[in-house]
Length: 236
Image 1 (cartoon, rainbow, N blue to C red):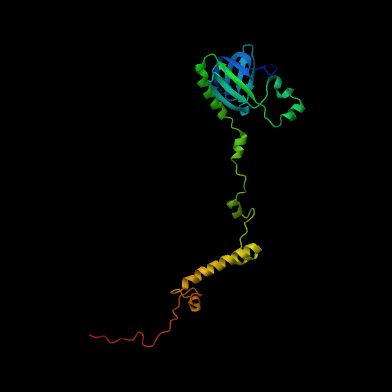
Image 2 (tube, rainbow, N blue to C red):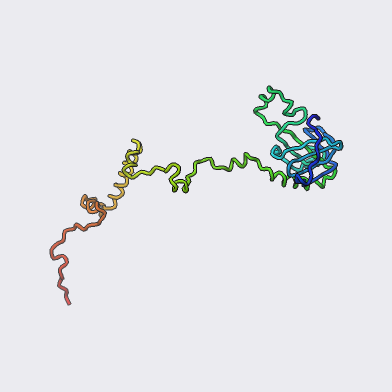
């Protein structure tokens, strides 16, 4: 296929984690031949016996897993899904009209790496996980950022930045809308009724009882009857 090219295999300088010989590569159901799979920290590469092969960049790999479902594929293998096009469907050969028609869907390619020794699949998968972790998705990192405006205390202490606006009680009233003022008056009326109900005695409300509490102090206005507390004669 046209995307196969010749390049030196990755080595220890590129963080080679796993080298698996006698591994068949399959792209979208089409066999590419048998070669060696190189799982390195920099990229995932496969080369056949003639030195032709391909490399996959980890940021383009959206999924990798060990597939043991023989109904999906007759042999156990390492499944890799890539957000790119290869071979005859490569991006270089796609016309401008085809690019416009593909705007709604992201290109996907499915690779299957089938080792002759299926017991190596776990080691291949582990190496893939470790290398993939070294290349986090930039979009995932951006999603963790807080988009809201933060209040920089240190900057405001140094006289920089905008200072939040605070109002006194009177200033706050002047900024109320007509609806807000009506709501405030209604709440004040409810509060006044609640306070006045506390000064009912024996179910009788008196105006004097309300006036006694207007200044926040309780005043006893009950008239004193002369001789009310004079000493009384006590029979001994």
